[in-house]
Length: 260
Length: 260
View 1 (cartoon, rainbow over the protein chains, first blue to last red):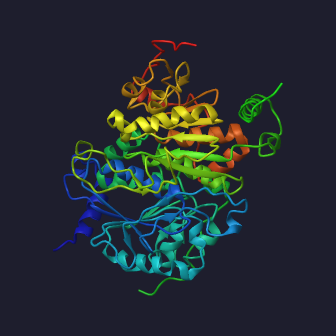
View 2 (view 1 turned 60 degrees about the vertical axis):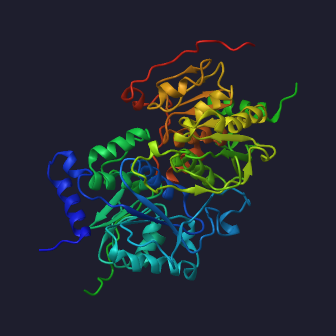
View 3 (view 1 turned 90 degrees about the vertical axis):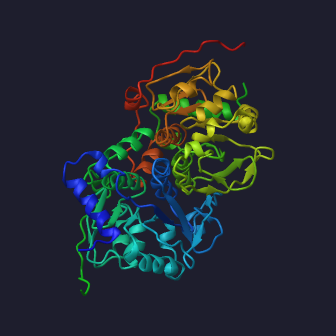
């Protein structure tokens, strides 16, 4: 019987989360993911990107890890609102991040891809086609895909959430779940795990999902250590989601099942 | 009697936090700060910068605001560890942000300056001299100065914390408070306010300090609305600080009082 690296990694994560092994066995004594990609697009939500990345930046000081920032071009990508209607007072308040790779010339051998959300996910469809195509093309070779906030809408449009359980931003619930008619959308969830696809709720939930992912892959002790270092009281129960009630969201079952 | 804009703004914030006025009077019916600066330096902590900025990015969609990112040069500034000893496994895992201004040619009329922390605050002193000189020079004309994490050490080195109450990162407590011998360092504090100087505890505490600052300046309703939008359970009690116990920090009183 032969396992792919991806299958072994998922088996290890499952075993570590279901069996009370010593932490070292669930830590870095095997081969955790090394190559991480974050997609960027105009008008991304800053914390969707930098909540997870701050955690992984720190993790990379004790594990060998590489990060690739992937966008349409190598020009810096801005958080600025895409249209005047989104920024009615004409504020000049944004940050620009430098990509390392493009969708057309992506890094080889990605293990983990992170997909953030933000107002930019509402861009006219053609502007997001290349990004969505990249997610669709790269997903089969990934060990894990993690979406934050309305990034789940992009992942859904790539077909990756068909037949899966998932969640997304609670304020932008209706318009985001509309992108995944074949997805079982779970309303009360800080994050949802379905095989190797992790989807988080809105903005700051990306930090809790990332810490939970670190716990599953690198061990609980590692996740707790990172949270302590960043003085962050992490939500470790994925059903702890007061924002589901606040924003009044409900589960949305799939309306069609994809063909096998 | 004549008030400066800064004095009026501080008086308004104080009044709003002590008197039960209608929110509109404590909201944007007066003139809140417009021009915000964030200093950047090599090996800054990503969440120290993007926690506060994500909040302010959203606020800028409903208030006229400008952001200036200020660094030693206009070259992108990286989160990468400064030295091999800080990154022993040689990970290639960092993000680079594009500045808009330099310390030598800063934006005019800054109202608010934010100073993040990170491993870069431990750089050899000469590398930080220009940044610290900039903080020293600009502080007298600011309405507010906000530090996050070990950024308090930079603000202390600029002399701004002399004779003030302040806090900082709890894990890096001892080495950071050493930079402020004339400061009254408060151990159990998610953040501390002393007149127009706000200092937060480590990393994620910058989000709670920023939301508390938004509450003081733009109104509680505005702060709560932003936290709900980012699905973030904010800490609104500044004495709620479990990390003080965890990291075993204690208050450090000033050992000398600056000359009047």
